Image (cartoon, rainbow, N blue to C red; front, side, top):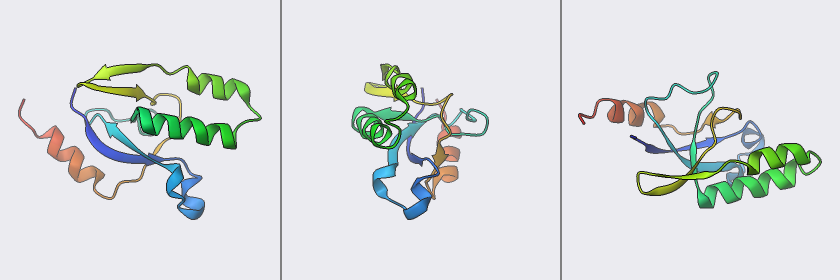
Length: 109
């Protein structure tokens, strides 16, 4: 699977551009998203940061927290990653996203 580094966030990031609400991730350049939203793969470090933020901001919704924690890691391209797409509304927050995506899409395998 081709993956390239990018950054994602939720709308709450735009309130004050708090970098704790910005997540480094990997994106599959061939994936067009889920209903228009990004489908990121988070590293363990960024997954843990995400879980911490969700516990702080959504602690009154234990079902949501348990659903988020149910995502399992997988070894992809030698990295332990969490596929966090397909159910959350992630925004891509990467000025060079389209350029990076095009480079990966145009690579010869």
